[in-house]
Amino acid sequence: MPTSPPAAAEAAAEPAAAAAAPVRARSPRGRATPYLFLAPALVVYGAFLLFPLARAVQFSFYDYDGLTVGTFVGLRNYAAVLTDEGLREAFGHALVLIAFFALLPLLIGFVLAALLVRSRVRGLPLFRTVVFLPQVIAMVVVAVAWRRIYAPDGTLNELLRGVGLDGLARTWLGDYATALPAVGVIGTWYSTGLVTVLLMAGMARVPKELYEAASLDGASPARQLRALTLPAIRPEIAVALTLTIIAALKTFDLVYVTTGGGPGTSTTVPSYEVYRRAFELGEVGAAAAVGVVLTVLIFGINLVVNRVADRSR
Image (cartoon, rainbow, N blue to C red; front, top):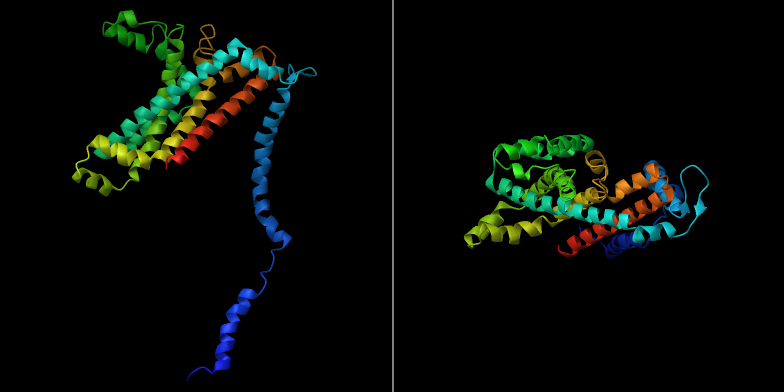
């Protein structure tokens, strides 16, 4: 039976009236609900990170030994970071370690990941576990083990003597020329597994059909890596660089256990300088200024890395 004109008009007016009806505003209690769920995490975050950071910034403006009342000195501690030759050297060493902790592992990890993913190696889960193992071991344990490897009568020198290269044997961590690279090699060994696993996860997302199509078009394996694999794993590269650069810039326990900043000041880094100035020299204000500058440097470098990665997508 056909609908009468008045009934049809009524039915059509109902949705319009519903759409025109004012949306009920959420109650204040409803608006506050998400913040109530976030409050415990925000309190913990503020108490254990934001508050100590704010106090460190405050101390950095004082000549303070951690015991007596501090004296306000303004930006003098920050000026010392720029003018103190020892501090400039420490920051230079940290930048050198970025090459060992971040760039070399990225190169090695990319090659390993490409070989393992493309060649379909058996026992891949076991290999991932073995490669990732250094990340599970405490850095202090890693440092103690490598200090033994680098010892004058350690594994490395014994191996060199065993193959007739006695002239290359030396005190690796006690030589001004080799101490910093020796520490850097430990960082390369430590970071390569993490980078490899991250890149393997990214490469596993690339459809195999793309590689098959590229092969049919005559693209070489190297060109496939450059044209298909690299663009696909840019997010993983950005994450890997972020994590390894942070590890390079804030490394302390590795330097403390292996060299103690020596020989001389050839392996000092900013984190070690923070410890030395605060707990050995009693210069808490100066140490806080070094820590703040290091935090800003870490934030700035990783901001650049992520911006470059976002623009490249």
